[in-house]
Length: 358
Image (cartoon, rainbow, N blue to C red; front, side):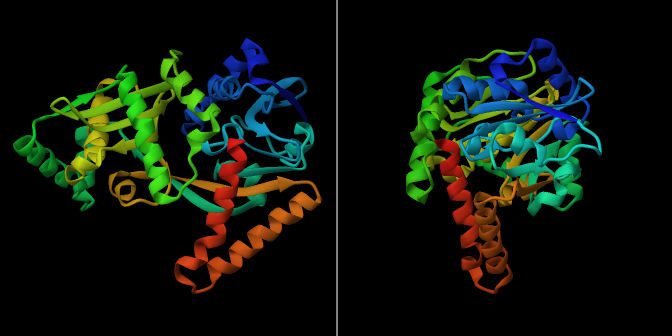
């Protein structure tokens, strides 16, 4: 089994088409982050040669594809912290050894954060689990809402109440799908940057190329891949704005923000509810909220996808360091230290975010 490494922009059209065809074979692969278009978009925004595509082949036939950002020593997901999914698209079969990837990429270690658990080849290298929260709508919004009520979840009923409250006290919420408002996008970015400062998080837009990526995706128009802007207004006042990636059947929640002045009406959740209703007339069957344990995700989601994080590496100092970090993390998480138990994991995630933004 061979692993060839190409630049996303130099990927032959027939291989890109095969990659897209493989995505259609599994719901786990139907994510915009796993598309060749995502890899190309990241490469264009970065403007360097760090983004690479590993093509796993057997007897000259491509079996699987994976995009990464590869530095001098290590590789991570293409787009780093901007990406919520990574891993192989396609099944290379039992003869595939993930340890062949770092060697082919010219690095000593590949760190993964959000590989779907179904990727059995990476299971031996997993160091922990997470979940992505999703809403599946095979029968439309009304069937989904009835399902949530039957499960004893009152979140949608509460949103209906807040919508009526907003109508009485302000005006009827105005939902816009596929907004072309550059001002709304700019406000979303400003709100996100304010949030990063207020919470002490890393400002992902400070890297420059990340902002270029968002602007490029906003202008992109490719069948089966892109990004859509959604807004919610009370009268002429913007209350919430969201910018999501889209695949052929999946919308992936990516960037969300709301105006604090309207917080008591939960405009961001009202906007999510409007998007779920809007999906009835669209080809999308899934809204993926991504990883992160938040109450609204638990209440609105009706399914989950398990994810793995860990690393694949050749024997080296870099691999020993990563294993040591995971060791500290495991010990801390096993001790009754309250919030302090999660500090090593938080530090690792922050470090990985910074690495991905360089």
